[in-house]
Image 1 (cartoon, each protein chain N blue to C red):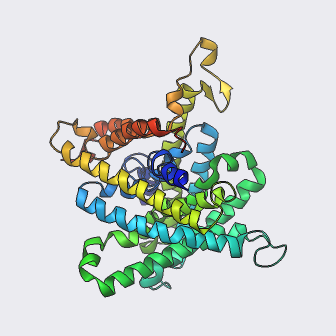
Image 2: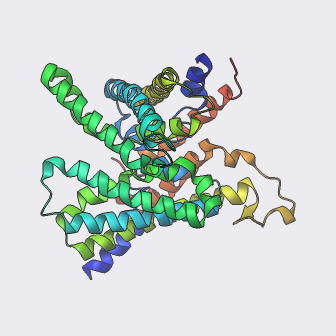
Image 3: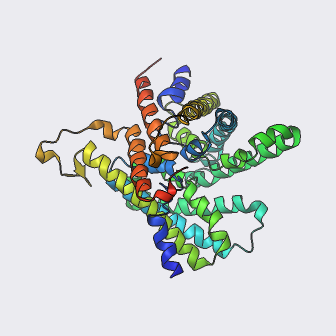
Length: 200
Length: 199
């Protein structure tokens, strides 16, 4: 019961991106197209899940004074694994993601979940929490990328969708500011539904 | 060099063009005073870590730099973040020792800088720009300074706008982060005017 709640909570009601405002840095830059957004979401899920698992296993052996450095080393190692994997098997996508793969290290979701959850919970719970938060992040990424690719280039995963109906591409959707405005609107909708999140 | 500076402050602004450091940008931009303090600290760390990482890249990580025929560039993530975390720790200790009043003002923000994407992003972009725009240590200092000031400018402007918006009637669901994102988007569009400027 508790485990399934841990899993579903970060997907909607307590989404890391739109409720806790974490991990925005990389969330927006990779959302011009669906494919890199999906790959980025899955990479972050992998890193969050395993950094939570590793730090939870080590939680009793690491003195709290040096825990930040230990966390950074664990996270950086996992990110190097992801980066090398993408370069080996998905070279085009890894070129599009450029520095944003490296920036998973400083993604606040990864660090935030380790600090807030993994250091005080058992390994399996922490792993599930990591997967769920990563998927919550991936969900927002894919949603933003869906809107931007559909209305910006008229395609989805590179296939023509709107062009055949005579749609003229709105290239403003491809510029960085629109990603921010779309996230703003998603927050608006989400908070209109979940009234307890509204400020004051 | 001037071109590089202008470019990194206005055209390729860390916040508006690349969304770097958004987490602390949204969280700390509630008052101009704290925004000024955090911006100064970020700029300082940026000016120091970008050249340090440049030297590290040139003399240790680059293909054949340390040992002939060995390419260590896959280690750059872990070494860059180690340099940044160690440097932030050092700055924290120095400030605590010599200026306790400043330490109390910045207190909570200093350790946060280590996980500010703008710092790590600055170093990673610097690594990509080697050979085109950045060719020596001087260039990397200018780039660090420019990108730091760009971030500083963005967060102070944002804080100034948010102080005013306290008095407006924002829809209840938009209050806080929602409206902050929309404002940042509009400011980003304004900053697009600068694109294409060449000096």
